[in-house]
Structure formats: C-alpha cells, structure tokens
Image: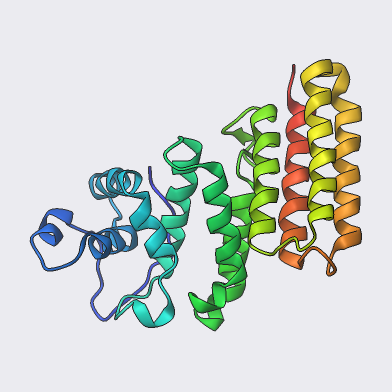
Length: 242
C-alpha cells in the first residue's frame, strides 16, 4: 500500500529507504520503522515498510505519541501521519481493537500540541479528524471498508473513545447519543430497506443533540468528528441496497 506523505528535508535529501541497511545500523526497531515511514517512496520499500508496520502496532503507537523533544533531528510529522494510518488499518483487520484505535485518535487530537509544531497543528488536526470520521466509509470515493451495520457499530465504539479522552464530558450525554445510534442500527437490522428513513431520522436526531451540547458537554473537535461520521453513515445508508 502506498501512503501519501509530505516530503520533509533533514539536511540530506532522501529519495528512498533501504531497511536492510538500516537493520545493520545502530537504530532501534522503532527508529528504523520511523525512518521507513518517513522516506519509503518506491514500491519495494513501501511494501517492506507496510509489512513491518502492520506487524508492530505497538511501535506505531509509540511513534504517534513521540513528543516534540523526543524526535531528534528527524521531524516526526510524516512518520506520525503514516503510523496513524497503519493503526487504522490494524484496527480494521482486527490486529488491534477498534476501541483502542479510537482512544489513540481522540487522545492524539486532545494533546496534539505536545507532538506537532504550532505551524502544523491546523493541518494535522484536520488530517486525524478525517481519518476517524471516514473510518468505515468515505463519501467522496464511495469506498467502504465495512457494511452499514459494521460502521454504525464502529460509531458506537468511537463514542466510548471520545468519552475516555474527555471529548464528551457527561455520561448522560454519552448514553443518550448511543441510544439514538443503537436505535438506528436496530431499525436497519429489522426493517432493512424500509428502515432507511426512520434510521436516518434517528441519526439526525443524534446530530441535533450533539449540536446542542457543542461547547458544553461535547468539545468542538468531538462535535465535528461525530457529526461528520454520522453524515457519512447517512450517505452510506442511502446508497446501500439491503
């Protein structure tokens, strides 16, 4: 898999990474992977890095949460972005739990200023938000990595992640949103095609409630991610033939 990346320069311009050469160096396994995530730019090295990344989700998580003072001479932006993408893939393939992925994502968003340079914060925030809200369905590409049922379940799991990370601060609000999304899921499971409209209404009611809690018991980032995730699922519901 090829992952788009922002090209960074660290004194010497790297156009490819040779992991075999790195493996013979004094770099730790985490740093070998971090260099690979940053500089792999051809099919062979990209495939090698992907295999290494998916086999080591713990190292990916360490890379995501490297603080600004812990990255040495190598800007961690590209490695962090690619590591997060691979963690998402790990969760979709069952290599880590969905719950753990969403906890990583919402904690990263909450504390991103500890890891990203001030000038990168807006762009990186948008990137990680999009990775989460497009978790199971991307309405632009119309690409789905899960069924509507799978993705509604993922949305429920993401709400728990938001609560654990403090993006939702009230247990009652959490439960109320989950009841509405669970209701939409139950309708679709029972009614299939006939349930599209009532299920959509349930999800829209959840969006309205989230908007009412925006800036109160729900952070701005929490609202943006939840509402867009919901809108994506509404699009998937409308486009699915049950």
